[in-house]
Every structure is written in C-alpha cells, then in structure tokens.
Length: 315
Image (cartoon, rainbow, N blue to C red; front, side):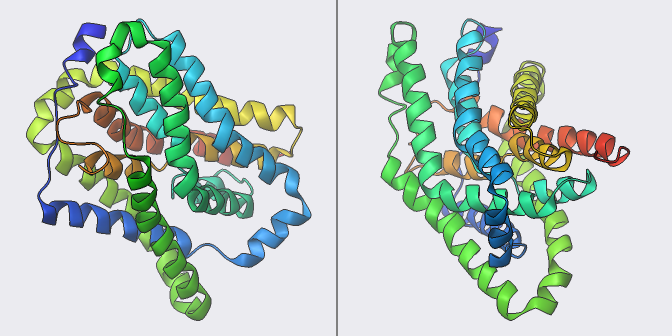
C-alpha cells in the first residue's frame, strides 16, 4: 500500500493563469453563498447559551487536528508523508458550506451550525495556516529519519497562505454579509440555489483538476477511499463524542457532529493549486488526491448521517 501511494507524489496539476482565476472565483462564489446565511443576531443568540458553540469551536480548531495527528501516527507505516500532509490540510480547513443544509435536514440546531461555520471560516485566515504548520511540522519531525528529504520541500510560505485565505474567504464573506443585510429579500431567494450550485461547482473543480490524470485517480481511489473513510469517520466520531462528554442537547450534538465531519476541502484544493504556496517542484500528488476525494466523500457521508437522523426526532 505504501509503495502504491508513493506513486501519487510526482503528480502535479498545473493551471494556466486564467484557469487559476476561474478556480479562485468559484471558491469566492461559494464563500459568498455561505455569508448570505450569516446574521450578526445569530452570534448574539449563541452568546446567551455559549457551551455548544464553544464545544464545537474547540472541536474544529483543536480536537480534529489533534485526532488527525494521532490517526496519522497510527497509520504511519501504511501512508506516505504527503498523504498525511493532505489529511492535516483537510483538518485545518474551516467548516464546509453544505453543513448548514445537512444540519437542518438532520433536525439539528441550524443557528448553531451557521454560527460555527461562520466562525471557523472567519478564523481560517489564522487557524488554517497555523494548524497545518503546527501539526504537519510535528509529524515531519516525528518521521524525520524516514522522510528527511521531504522536510525542505514541504516548508510552505505561511504568510502567503494567510494572504490567500484572507482574499478567498475574508473578502467574499464581508461582501456576502453586507449583501444579506441590505438586500434581505433577494438573499432569501438566493441562499438555497447557491448551496446546490456550490456542490456542482466543487465537483466540477475536482473533475477539471484530474481530467488529465483520471486513469490515476481511478487506479488509486481504492487506497484513498479507505483513508478518507477512516479520517472522515474519525471527524464525525470526535464531534459526537465531544457533544456527549460536555452533555449538550441532542440537537446540538447532531450539529457539532456534522460540523466536524464537513470540511471546506475546496479551500484546500485552491491552496494546493497555488504555486506561490506549493511551488511547482513540490511533490503534492498525495495531498491533492486526499483533499479532492474528501470533498466528494463528505457529501455522501454527511447526507447519509443526516438522512438517518431526519427519521428520528431529537430527544
């Protein structure tokens, strides 16, 4: 398995300047759609009952990256360093934009879901580069004797990542929040269509990225599938366990579980496509496969869990 996964690393997906602009615009559009559901009043409501919100925030910003580190160490003999770094990148991303829809479908706390998605997205300009550098750095030191040759190439420009995340997330969020405030009637009509369009756009982004390497995607998906399956299951389980430990309500526990398992891997892909962050000579094939498949798989797993909970009233 290790040798098979190692063959992914040389794969490098290059876009033209216009192609990168298109990818960036897609992500900005998705984040604008997320912002349409954010209202300052929702944060006031969360402050009145802060425990579920703080538990979810703690889970997203610390527990998931930490549990990912433990998982990567446990799988160390079976996965390559770039596969591991892809897992860290996904864990460092903010919540995914479809988690709000899934939470509502699962009869969870939609206000809490929106608050957590908004908070992790707003904090992502700092938390994504920080968590990726922290846990990825700890892992690389852990395996330095095994993969010392990877230490230098995987030293990314965190300042550049910060700038990129701020532009791709911060600006669309600010515009979306102001748009929702001053054009509430149009916002109501746009929110749901944009959510569905966002899913289509993400899948199109993955197809576009792997169009020239589709045979490799099909060849190695068997290995990637199980790694993402385990990692995604760990994310859901971590959220459910935290909710249980801190004894939040059933509705809030469903929400935290879904929020933990749905990551904005589209941001991860855009970061990987950016040559200023991950230079063209860096071997990131494993990271690309993990991040891309996570974005597809969490839609399937999230909808499955939401469908199950939709048939059971929270108690």
